Length: 155
Length: 482
Image (cartoon, rainbow over all chains, first blue to last red; front, side, top):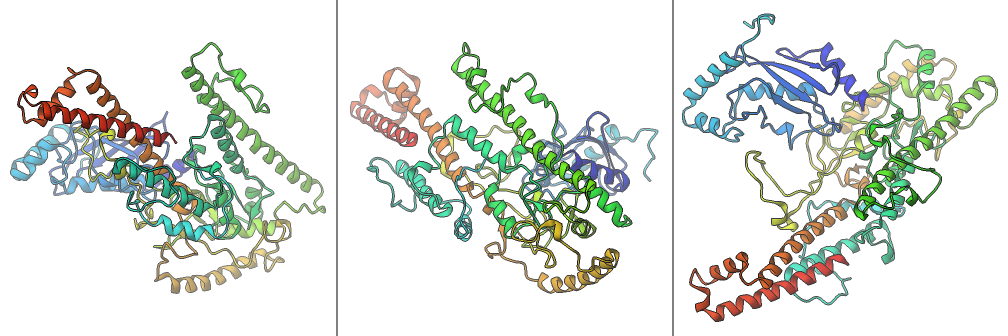
């Protein structure tokens, strides 16, 4: 089982996805520290979001567990950072990888889906007053997802 | 764990596949022929009866079982379960003497033992029939530039099975006694409660099984190693169970990566029937139906779900496995063995295999790669039409876990039993204690909030109803106990 992940981890490091980083923890190779850049032209643009990803024992037969650590205003992500995303639940397939999962999370930032909400209050606001919701999301990004000095500033 | 004992005969496969196509059974729609208990009482009881009756006859048909002694619904004793697990574990030992085209009948061990709950008899049979790729020992990586000598050196160093943890934390401090003793009751603490003894027993039995597996596998490894050393000392002596260099080189020189586990295996791999994507046998046997569950579209984690006891057990479903690549339902694979190789079981000795052009094997590589080109062209032509899951050449996920249907019905029965017990307790409370709030509530609600005393007739009727319900519940419980 160990071998299955190391192979994937190596490739993740050697062939990274633009805008996404995932690094395994030193003491626990199943635990990854992840950053995702907010997609352009989304309220999360210019934000860098920290996530944690954990590979359960049954990975890849079971989906990885992914959670936002950075606070984010999004109808499909709740206060605890839990994400409502089909590929993390019923639509998981063992042919998916850490890479594809993180790309899906990034895509979710680009296109929020308030009709299948996890954070009900956010979703309600998103449907009723989309402008205010987007402004709120931008403000949260500014407040909580500001890249630190050491990291390159995305243009 | 597979619950269908006994060998599977050849004709079983098509039968079971047809039966397994339906996603969930429509319980109660068909009366069973084999039920010989008198059928009184409610439709629910009827449902339960017909469910178990039908499935019982199904399982007899599909796995060729006979006699009531192997009724899959009968509760197995702890010792029976332990014996069953041991038999299953024995079948998962990789043996160098049991090979098919250079691969094995048991998996290398990329996935944990607990997850190897497929029917080993079925899978072994499929591999021997060349309908499923054998379990090859995987390589972590493969470098095209490796020479023949390098490839052979690496393949010769491969173990039969992935390494076992020496002292798993889980079994630390668990006594295992003498593994040769079949009985280990003496390891239990006689002063402990029954419940505690049961807990101890299950822990000890798990630990014993683990160390037994280690010793069985090690025995096979050691024999294999001794033979390898012997052949190195005396190269002129042919050992029929040791693969020839040509076999090892031909297999591993022409390999591919499984897209799920990223490990490198000899070609050809199994391919999905629907979208023709490769998958190694070790990953294939991991893919199975969802465990029995209530249908849910979206579970809202912020809201409390209705407890499962409150739901209708007949609604439990278990969807067939989807293709991991294209998500089409009823996942199945096909396998086309190499035409130029048939070794091991139902083939020549692995030691006798010679590549087509054995004088110059590197020549063979260019040769075979041009052949491969033709093969690919040939395959490309058939690629357009995907193969239906019920095609006889397709091995479906359901066919290697033929007990999925029994497990689904068992789970329904278990839940029905649970809710019946809960109802019975609830009812008896109402009967025994006239002032019990639940009784009061049910009676007053039945008279639209009027004082229950003012309507003795109604009240009488409710008590009769309660009586009826009690009897029904009792019947239900006794039926389920078998």
